[in-house]
Amino acid sequence: MSNSLALAAVTATLRARLFSRLGGPQVTVAPPNKAPDAASGDHVNLFLYRADLNPAFRNADPPGWQPGESPKPVLPLVLHYLLAAYSNDEGKAHELLGAAMLALHDAPVLSGDEIRAATATALPGSDLHLQPERVKITQETLSQDDIAKMWTAFGTPFRMSSAYQVTAVLIDSALPGAAPMPVLRRGADGRGPLARPGTGSPALLGIRYAAAGQVGALPGEQVALLVENLPAVALTARLRHLRVTQSVNVPLATPATGASEVALTLPATGLPAGLWAVDLGPAAGGSVRTNELALGVTPAVTALAAAAAGGTPVRTKVTVTAAQPVLPGQQAAVLVGARQLAVGLLTAAAKPVSVTAVLPSGKTRVRLRVDGVDSEIVDRAHGTFRTGPTVEVTIP
Image (tube, rainbow, N blue to C red; front, side, top):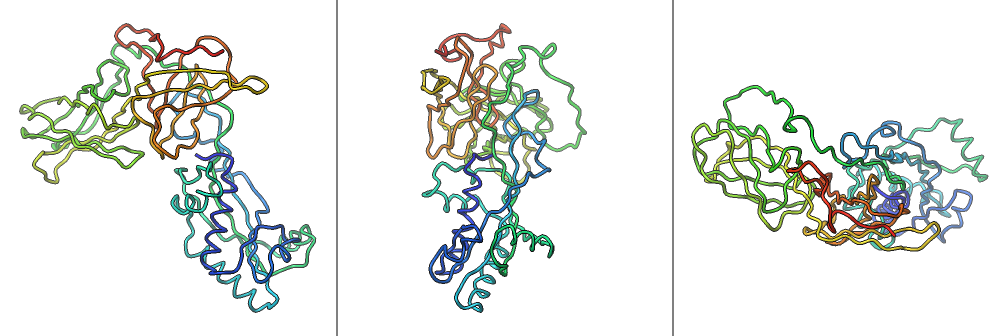
């Protein structure tokens, strides 16, 4: 998702594109009654005159939340802009308006790279470029009545113009959602029924972690891949991170004929936390590979700290240090008790990450969530919550 700088980020990106495509005339963002004098000489004015809710996203849960949790809904916006051109020569104004309209028509999507380039200096805290949902530009048709009412409201004479809407801009809530503690046991072994048609092709059926109920493994740990129809040849497991551009190949032992599972030992280093896609194939290469399954790599918390951060009411800064750095482009959150607090935009890899919020005093458990995978706070062998300095912190 994105933070409250998203509106300014969209305006800055559109402004940068128009300035680049027009090759000289200034691009202003003034109200229409001030636009004629907003710049000397020829210029184009882009005015944000309305922001509506996008109904398609009003009830959608933000990404990165688990089933059974209660996130605060995002603020989904549709932004409405009015584009007009100004010049002492009305013919020149028409030329500018046509060129500006073409600049928005030719590329109707604001890519992450374009947004980042436009906001890196002016809005370094913006994270709109990381939003999974694409930001699209659409020309908007207004009725004559709407146009007349709008220019009357602006209190300025009518001018040739074109309206656009930009959507979807999804802004995260500033309030923490509720993320209950994990269930210690789900039935006898924590597994549900598995049904799939037999195809005769090599296939991955599932992943079994070290203990029932686990949804991820730490780097260096071993998991069992449940398989069928594997050839009795040397295999390679291919791991591909689903959020950042990173992959790794892990050689496996040759399985026995008819093997129902193979052991995969995760590399001890170089595995960022989060969800990875895993599949199997012959080490010698070839096109016959299994389907992909999602494998969770758990963030390993090595230290926790909490300190008063001032303010009224008093806010607390909670810092979590992990063994694996959180990379730019990953979504991270710190779960303090049942509160999920989003980590701000990261511009560089970071092992310690911090959040600040008003929190109740006392000892509480803390989890680090990276791309939807939580650090482990449950002792699965004994069916209890873990204790100690890597899972508990005292809020002053």
